[in-house]
Picture 1 (cartoon, rainbow, N blue to C red):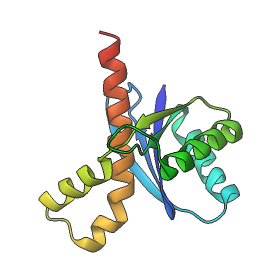
Picture 2: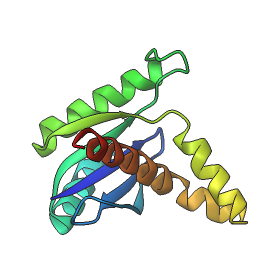
Picture 3: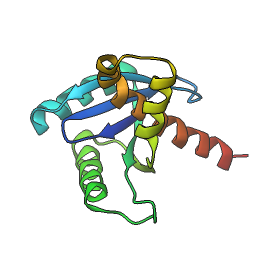
Length: 140
């Protein structure tokens, strides 16, 4: 059972997948958004390639735990993913994941150009890892 994590943005979708045991998340790719149809086609290809059974979409909440306009967009996207791809979709609080990914890349002395290329898939991996960690903790 593999999970897919998505970091949905205005221009890109960061994609991560879990290992087969659901322990670790790895950044997979960054989809440059073009049309809804092409975006869903690429997600469908990745789902088939990695035998994904569930999807986790990052939900950007405000620091006071409310959902703003960006969060509403991500909720609509998650509903579209569920309807189009016919898989369970979970929303996961993604507050500060991009900042955390940025900090990690800075500490690793990754160039600005390279950071831009990988930040979204790294954020997707952090979203997915957070979700998986919470699920394993709730089973204990």
